[in-house]
Image 1: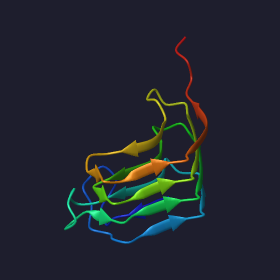
Image 2: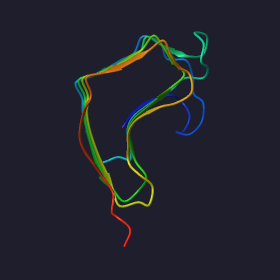
Image 3: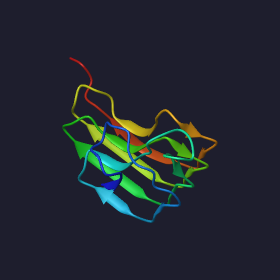
Image 4: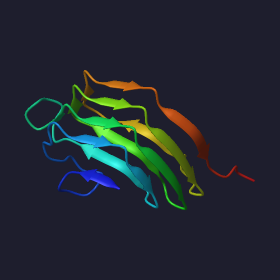
Length: 120
């Protein structure tokens, strides 16, 4: 898991500017990349975040998310391969763009597999 914060997932985080997460292979976790800034403005937000060229493969029994980003300004999520499978009751999430993903871009994403069991 790539974790850009000083708090646990699910809470607002700190200001991490000009960070690039590039060319990583991530597996064996419930959240592949987690980057939530503290605010939807430059002071407190994650400015100029770049997430590119990563391969994220998750297969778990828990609720799962490949990339989770929020409170990020002028950021780019590009050319990532995200494959997510879970046996949990909740649907798997490839990319979650939370509140405050402002003036930013998502492009050229490969989503080869999303899977959860069907109800009987």
